[in-house]
Image (cartoon, rainbow, N blue to C red; front, side, top):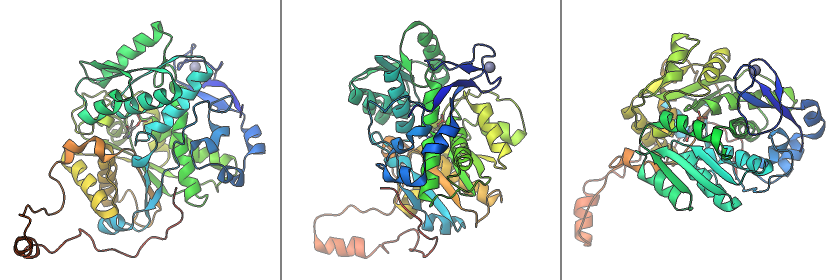
Length: 429
Ligand SMILES: *Cc1c(COP(=O)(O)O)cnc(C)c1O
Ligand SMILES: [Zn+2]
């Protein structure tokens, strides 16, 4: 541990001390943790990391804590699954899904960022943890604060899916529903963070929060047998995850833990809120804020904090962006469930449908090893897919009726026959 040098400005490079701040005092650009990479290189190896328990803490030399995490839940190391049938249906040969729909403890990738930010908050001496959230972050803050014994206050748009509200309340967090969209909620939280000594994981603790997302990239490389893929498709809300996956691949190359190679980074959004994708497609060096209107509420950030950085990463890596309609999102959820047995929330539907579009447009080639980041669980957005699925019967409890109605009508159709395909490299736990 202890490889953190400070916080460095992403624009002017100025080094700031390790505290609960997210912006450079000189130029107001975002700060990000700076590490002593020489010291990391001297200490870590594939073998060392692989010998540790299967969770995000195995990569602790590249996380921004000074000591061992105090509230160390087994977060992360979710399965990397070969998606053979989905690949066959869509016309792709080497497809994987990184399945954060089963992340611990609250079934989304946000468990990673909260784990890091919350432990940093403990190091910095905060007793109250807070966030502005589109839903998943609220769930994770509430659950992990309960485990750590911290007070939790979460702010969400009033009109959130019921499942996301229930999954916040149950842990005993203070839930503040704000009559406005996420961007209004976030503005309010920025003001509150200036007055209260609270650790807002995605506001004043954002530099540490964002680093938690890097573990998605480390795990993908390790689970591919310490190789980098050709392409990844990442759903975008504030635009933080996508940049950190890219950063993680770069760090592993720099440290000699994988063969360095360019990875094309693709960004996915819903058409009803696609400010980053539209900036990429228009070649614009500027994000034009939007008013969100989509079923993908976990991605509904109209004025994304890391939007510009995300757009640059996509463009500089040779990737591209796609945005998809609500109808395509639902079809994406259905396809993933029926092909691979993985039920994702609307954000995952965005990823699958955007991948489909990028493949059709020739932006991704069928033989390029591609990883789809599935970031959340379908049980949290069931309203979006009510009534979607296979055939269904209602019968009296009589054998004759079973034979007449069910056997007489059905072909027990599975959407796709099982196919031989991509080699399995390695799974998670
Ligand atoms: C928050 C979230 C994202 C995107 O995260 P950013 O880092 O803000 O771009 C993707 N998927 C799900 C399910 C999320 O909750
Ligand atoms: Zn600066």
